[in-house]
Every structure is written in C-alpha cells, then in structure tokens.
Amino acid sequence: MSDEDEVPVVKKARIFYGSLEEKEKQRLSREGISTSAKDAVKAGIEAGHINISSGESMEMEERVSERQAEVLAEFERRKRARQITVSTDDVEVKACLRALGEPITLFGEGPAERRERLRNILSVVGPDALKKSKKEDEKAKRTQDEYQQTWYHEGPSSLKEARIWLAKYSLPRAVERLDAARAQKEIPESTRTVKQQELHKTLRNVNNFCSQIGDDRPISHCQFSPNSKLLVTASWSGLCKLWKVPDCTLIRTLRGHNTNVGAISFHPQATLTLEESDVNMASCAADGSVKLWSLDSDEPVADIEGHSMRVARVAWHPSGRFLGTTCYDNSWRLWDLEAQEEILHQEGHSKGVHDLHFHPDGSLAGTGGLDAFARVWDLRTGRCIMFLEGHHNEIYSINFSPNGQSVDPSWLVTSEDSGGLFVLMNFHFSFLSYGLIYFF
Image 1: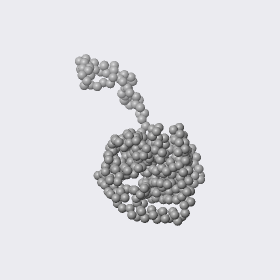
Image 2: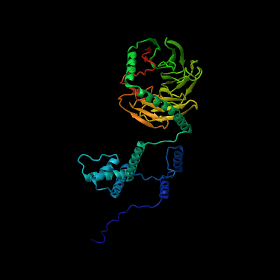
Image 3: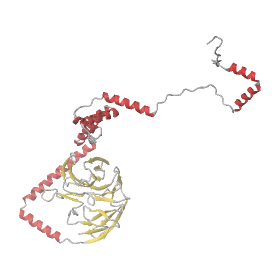
Image 4: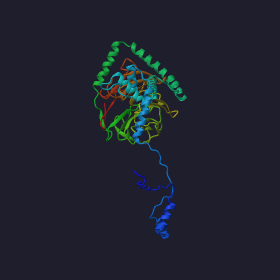
C-alpha cells in the first residue's frame, strides 16, 4: 500500500466538561433566538406553568425493610440461644418448661429436641424469666403457708375491757348452773323418770290454741317477750308487729325497714325491769340495716350502721349489754350498746353466717351459716373452741339448751334438710307459715 492511499481521518464528536451555559448562549445567538424568548420563559416560571427546582435537597433516611429486620432479629436470637446453657437432665428440662407455662413434651419429641425447644424459648423470653417464675412459685407457696397459719391482730382496749366484763359476768352464773346440775343429779332416777313422763304427757295434749293472719307476706321470725304476754313478728314486707298474747290482738306496727326483715328479738329484761321508752327490741333486714325499738313507739329509737351485706339474725347477750349480729359477709359482730360501738368483728366461716345464739351463762356464742358448719366461740378469749359438722346443707338455726347442761341435749341445730326446730319455753311455741301465726 502506498503512501498516497491514506485512510481518511474520522472527526470525533467533542466532549465538553463543565457548564454548557456559554455554549448554549452562543448557539442561541447563532440561531437568532431573541431575548423575547427568555422573557417568555421567565414569565412562564413566574406564572407557575414551568416548575423549576429551587435547589433545596432532602436527605433520604436509610430504611431497613421488615424482612431484613426479621432476619436480623432471627440472627440475634440464634446468637443468644448459643450462649444459653441448658441442663442435660431431662427431668429438670421438663420442670423448667412447666415453670414457663409451656407443654413439657410434644408428640414425637425426644430429650434433645426438648432441650433445644427450651433453649429457643429462653432466647425469646430471656434467661431471667425462669428465675422470676421460680421466685413467684416460692412466693405463692410461702403465701399459702402463711394463709394456713393461725394469726391474730391486736384489738381495741374496749374489747379487752368487754372480755374481762364477760368473764366476771359468766363465771358466777356458771357456778350456779353447775350447782343446779349437781342438785339435779342427787334426785333419784325414778323421780326424774316420772317427771319426764308427766312432761311428755302434757306435750302430747298440746293443741292449736289460735291462729292469726300476721301479714300479707311470709313471716320470717317471731319471739315471745320475757313475761310471755307479748309476741313480736318480722315479715318480708318490711314490717314488724307487736301482738298481745293470748288473744292475738295487734298492739302496734313497727315501721322502719324498707326490705325483708330477717329477725326481731326482745331484750332479756324487756317487759320485766326496762321501761317502755327504753330499748326493748332489735331487728335486722336484708339491706344490712339494724334498728333498735322501744315498746311505746312505732318508729326506731336508733340505727346500728356498719354492715354492707345482708344481716340475717340479731341476738341479745343474756346480760342485755351486748348485741350480736350475723352477716352474709362471712362474719358476725358484737356491739357494746353502753359504749355504742362495735367491739368485735369475728370471721371464721367460709360463707355467710345465718344464725347466732348465746349460752345462758353468757360465756359462749354459737354460730351457723351457709357453709353447713357450726362453731362455738369463747367470748372471753375470742377463740373457736368447738367445730361442729354433720349437716350437708345450710344451717339456718342454732340454739343452746335453756338449762345449758349436758343432761338434756345441749345443742339443737337445724339445716335446710332437717326440718323445723322448735324450742319449748314454758310450753309455748309458735309456728311460722306464709303470713300465718299458730299458737300451741
């Protein structure tokens, strides 16, 4: 190939670096574009038809996708799992799973898989979860042991004074009762048998003396006065009525309760030594109200407040100084009417307490409730000295024998399935039905 045959040189396009503003101006001037076009562009920008960036910039935050976060979390969990030490004893592994609330074994799971499952669970909840669970179990066990223990709390000084007063009151009466029991024991057996036969013969001849409509709602309770000349009744209508015995004439209607009246009771010295204007009766109702009554007024003398649930029974202490009430909050209470305060709030039943009765000596109190158990309490010490069981249903009545001796049955207790209970006092007793009163 000769030198004359040269290859033509190809002209390459030029590459410009930097701004093209000057080149663009030269091109526009060569093409004859006037400044009027620039003015038109500026006018379009000002009118908002052409959007030009102001040069502001915003940094974009680095966001990790959810999938990446899950993968990272899984890597961290596996890293923690490798650092957790798990016992090789399968029994201990099962105990740890049970403490964490997990199933101790799965279908087809072996000891190795079980250890790995425990390791994975601890990597999620943390190794401290097992320690916390053990501490909670120990605390629950300790609390249960403390609950089963007998505990006492310090009572007010008025309770101590009342206990001393009750001891001084009951001890002489107990001596008299024991002397009477010894004298009764000296009587020949044949003489006692004859007296009992005469008593039974008299009881067989007891007939219905009269009946009276007491209320338009069921009558819940009634009681004779200490002199046996008056009878007081309580009804579900909220009314209490005072009747004259034996002609059954209505003397007075006591109005004060707004719901079912559970019981009304005479003071031990009512109609004997107390004036008619004094407190002669006490009543209770299902709304927790307890009211005190006199014999010369149809309105309550005073109210006893403090019960939040149903009060089923009220009972006077033989001394007349104290009043006992049973409540469906699983407790019974003792009120000192001279001091006008509650001196004892006694718990012990697992369900509501329905009935309460005091021993004739004034030293003991018996309670029965919806838990089908009865308890005997020593008022001088506050201890439960006897626990009576045998009923299968609720106990609705409990009574001491009037003589308080073991010669006759010392206890008369009724429950829901044991029928009615009648305590004979001077051969008078009454039977309550749906608004009717029967005298025998």
